[in-house]
Length: 210
Image (cartoon, helix red, strand yellow):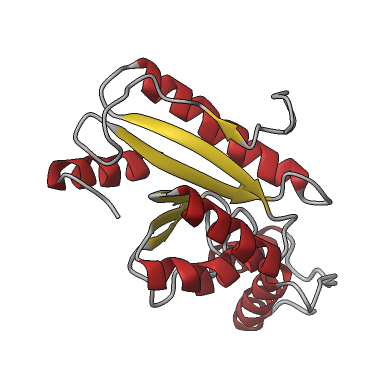
């Protein structure tokens, strides 16, 4: 959020930038209405912040956590006065094609900054659109390096797959020498496959038996 705010402040300096009830589990589709009436994109005005993540389905625990966190931050920033944010979240059920559709819906709404997508596969699918549209985007949890590779306007907050795979292999080799390691993973999921691949590569270097 701090990185997003810093980018928004720089946009403001340039003068521009390109129905469920609220509860603890599912954020509203359109929430955090700003208190200022200044034109969108103007200094001290309102910026449209979109969020994409799984609000329903098997991965909803991740999407709702991220979107609720964004909403809390927006409410706190808006309460300070000055620059304001209008926040709208879209559900992608952790599916790449649905995530692109959710992104396009937010672009039609006038989104200027994107928080998300939350899951790795969806983020990879949307990152190409983000790059082509030159939209500033910040994913809170997608971890594959493919999300940001070659894209100067797409950023990650979370640790990456290489960090997790290498870190896990090093920890096991240092604390459980001689252990036989079994791996269960999904070969059709970018997040699972990415961690598995980097773990296996590091395990070969440190002498783990897999």
